Length: 176
Image 1 (cartoon, rainbow, N blue to C red):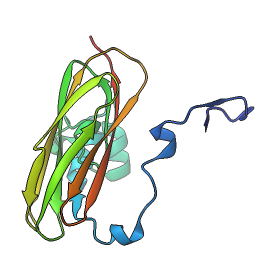
Image 2: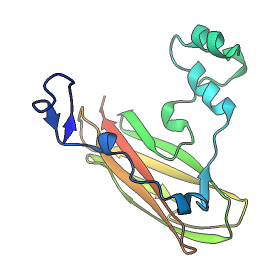
Image 3: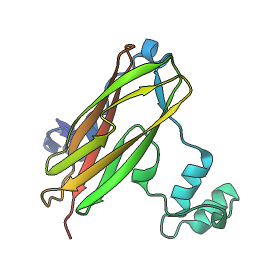
Image 4: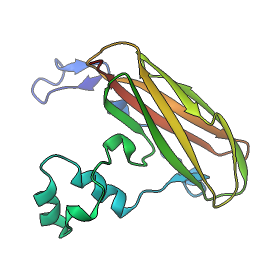
């Protein structure tokens, strides 16, 4: 159960969601050899921040950077993070995730569980990646229902060299 209010916490509980639970425990040994990583740059984050409506003076105040230097069309779903959140899925949306192999050569199998009310496809479903190479996963989400609450899924990557990666998904489906 998750607490939803600070007043009367015992009376303000609802079933916990992945937003409340997180993505599990950190395995410190595995963290030393993750296999694949998601790389994001300062420019990626600046492009995202500069694209938020009304943020230009705030970004300049905190960073001294002019937003005109950045592509401000990057959305939160476009950031190369190890999770995907789509706050308003309208019909269909494709997002990409770029993975960099920092381990030895390895083949990966990709499987997924779609969030409720969403059909999805991930390509490629299998890939080989050499050390130092990059692989882009394209994830297409298709709305099947209309709902105002988040639903959750996951993408799992299982490597033949023992590396496993989990990408949590959260989607709110809004058909317009």
